Amino acid sequence: MPYNIAAIIFFNSLILFANGMDDWDYSIQKTKKVTFKVETFADGFDVPWGMTFLPDGNLLVSDRNGDLWKVKKDGNSKIQIGGIPKVRSKGQGGLLDVEIHPEFKENSFIYLGFSDFLPDQKNKTYTSIIRAVLKKNNLTEQKIIYKAPDSLFASEKHHYGTRIIFDNDGYLYFAIGDRGQREKAQILNYPNGKIHRLHDDGTVPRDNPFFDNERALSSIWSYGHRNPQGLVIHPRTGEIWESEHGPRGGDELNIIYPGKNFGWPVITYGKNYNGTIISHLTHNDGMEQPVLHWTPSIAVCGITFYKGKVFTEWGNNLFATSLKYERLHRLEILDGKVVEQEIIYDAGSRVRDVEIGPLGFIYVALEDPGRIVRFVPVD
Image (cartoon, rainbow, N blue to C red; front, side, top):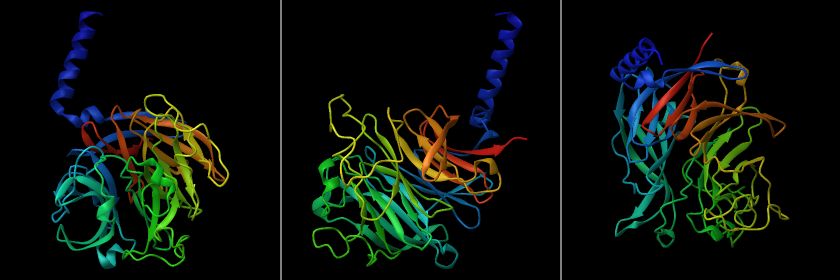
C-alpha cells in the first residue's frame, strides 16, 4: 500500500477514535427500497432489552441489569427512573420488557416484565408482570399483574419470554417461556411456554379460551411455545404476531390464535444444541405450523411492524431482530405469508429490539456495547 494512502487511513482512524462512538455508528445503508443513515441515539446501557415511546416523544428503555431509563426525545440525555422492583439479573433474566397503557395520557400506567425471585431463595426465579404509575420519574402505586405460585419458581436462568403488548381492544398479552422445562409447554395447568391474556388490571377475561376449563389456567391464550421474545399487533389486520427462539434451528414466526397449540416440544424444526434429536416430527394433528421458521436459528428477539410516514416503501413490513447473526431483517407479508425477506442492517452487535418512533423513524436496541441507534432516511 502506498505510504500516503496508509497515512490517510491511519489519520482518519485516529479521528474516529477521538470523536467516539457516534462516528463509529454513523453509516449509510442501501437496501432494495430504501437508503438510510444509522446514527447513535443514546448509549451507556448494559443490555437494552425493551423500548416504548411515551406520548411526549420521550423513550423508555429497560436495561436487563435492573435499570429503567427515560431518554429525551432529542437523545441528548437520559434520566434514571426510580422505584424499580428488584430483579434477579442472572443468565437471561433481569429487567425485561416495558410497555405503556394505551390510555397513558389519562392514567400514566406502565407495565414491566422481569425475572422475579423468592426472598429466601434468590436463585429461584420466574417471570412476573407489574403495573405502576409513572410520576415525576418514579414508579408509584405498584400492583402485581401476574405472579406465578412460589412452587413454580425454579433455578433455571433462561427462557423467561416476557414481551408485553396491548391489542386494539385494550387487552394485555405477555409471554412466558418454557423456563427450560420443555414438557410443561404442553401442560395447561402450568404457565410455562404460554402466551397469556389479561385485562389491564390483571383480572382474567371471561372469553379466554380456557376460562371454564378446570384443568387449565384461565389466563392462557395459546400454548406450546419455547421462548417467545417478540409480540406485535399487525397494524392492518389486528392479528397478534409472535417470534420465538428455537433450539439449534427452528426459530419461529407465528400468528397467534386463541386456544391454539404451537407444538413445542412435540413438533419442532430444531435440534438440541449438541445435535441430538428433540422430536422426529415437524407436523402433528392439532398443532399449528409457523408462518416462517429460521433454520439455522437466527436467535430472533423483538419484532415490530412498520407504520409511519418516513419509510413509506416499508409500510406494514415486519422487522425481526437477530441476536446470533447481529442483523435486522425486513419481511414483506401478503395474506399472512412472508413473500420477501431482506437483511437491511448488519449491526456487528446483538440486535435485541426494534421500535417505530412517533415521527416514523426506526429505533434499534444493540447490546455490544449497549446503545440505541436510529434509522434516518437519506435522499
